[in-house]
Image 1 (cartoon, rainbow, N blue to C red):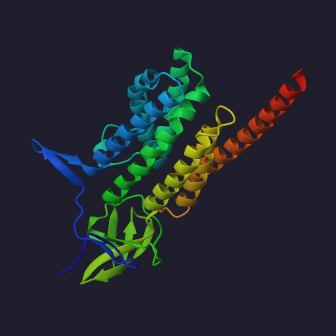
Image 2: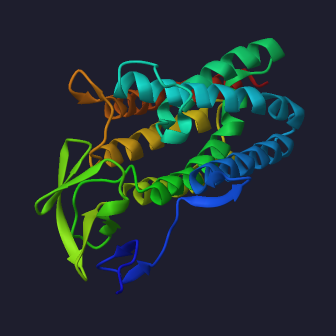
Image 3: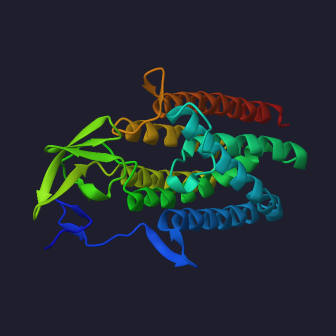
Length: 297
């Protein structure tokens, strides 16, 4: 019987089998999610070192930060998820059971960067500008780990990009009649293929990954025409905030704060702050240029 693990009904794409496990070492399973995240981190580091060298900086400053950035990112991602999902840090070390939030990683990594650049006496915004594209590279690849894990998807959909997950493979989905109830909340109508139940969803992992790719291209162009330090950092937070706000509006597994999706609130705040910062800096840059021209003999 033809019952693929995942398929795209409107696009005619089928993935017959997609295991979460990449390989095993001495009976210990290595998950594809972890492998994808590690690959993303490696590519991000390579990109940061290249950008540092291209802009005349010392790549060693960025290489030295890698350990602290990864450590703080993991701690932040796990803490953010647990605090807003369960209200407790209990089970912090059970990372293999799932539960990481990208905004937590970003917040913790930024805190680590502030401390690190102060110790190293490196200009903060120059450092963050250099790492902006690297962060996006890691995010673009990392979201495909959610695809493999059958998680972080969106509302029920029957549109062009609708993605069908085999119901039995979605963790936290309980079948009740002709519906699947996801983590006791969102309800997904069941669709059947050769008698096998599926849920059709928005592939929000893909929306975010693709949006980040577009943002990466924009920031890459801006990096060659940068007007002030912090411009790329602001562009990242402005662009990613918009992308994440859009994606979160379709998610059914949001982390909540006072009845509101916390990531949507944070996205709106970051985008607004980045926009204000950019406008102020552009005005200052323009005034500085005018002042320079006036003082020329």
